Image (cartoon, rainbow, N blue to C red; front, top):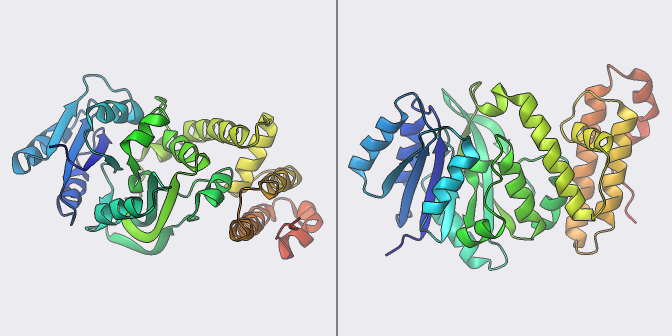
Amino acid sequence: MAPEVTVLTAVRNGAKNLPDTIASIRAQSFDDWEYILVDDASMDETPWIIEEAMRQDSRINLLRLSKSGGPFVAANEGLRQAKGRYIVRTDGDDLSLPNRIERQVNYLKSRPESKACATFCQTLNDSGPVAGNLHKSPLSSGVLKWYLCLRCTLVHSSACVEREALEAIGGYKELSLAQDYRFWCDLARLGWLGVIPEVLVYFRQHGERVSVTRNDEQKKLGKDILRDHITALTSKPWKQDDIESLYAVGHAELFPMSSGMDALNHWDRLWMADKTLTELERNELAGLSAFRRRKFIRSNAKRQPVNFLMHLMAFWFPKPKMS
């Protein structure tokens, strides 16, 4: 009989932290799962660690790739082998709290409109969870689909998605980085994505994550996804300069202040015109717009004092005017 859940990890050279990740899955309160670990041609002890775990637990399976194709090629290989109704993702250095799978499966079963969910996450370092360092995000797809134009606060290791929904969006695009961002955007635009406002995952932050070691490539691919996402939302293509500006606002980067503010104002007009949003969602987006506006202005104030003075009103009264 097929398991209800497939836990999926794509891992390359993850020997240092992988035993803790596997242990956190084996400690789950929900036990109807298979665990597929796809080894992306590791050159360390990763395969041996997985083989040892397989000897201890028959629900664990190893899929070895002879040539590294990157995390999303590896993930798609795992998806082709998956038997569960739900796919639970975790990276090989992150941890799942014991009730994580149970909470996410129950969430999706109780909300037929949701075919995927994420959770809040807490940063983890070698000393343990970092107090107060939380990854939070909006809870509704309506807000998420627009806020993802500014930044992605969702952690991939917190994803739980119906396998049929993941197949419907074509799985992961097989590029080297950032395709978890595309995954979230696709699900949110379809209205399928919800968020459980609980910390159910610990996200390990360290200098060896590819998002750190290949940050420039991560940013470039992220901007490509942003362009595709906002074009799909509005049916109107954005110029690359405007994409650069909106990305800079969302990430509070050093950037010409006027260009950033123009892009944010444009984004405000777009979500305000979205008739599918509820009043609560519109108010939440106005608050998020104000927060990102102040963060962006503050991060550029010292470098652009004249522009800062020009945008003082936007700093002190940052909320967009609702139509």
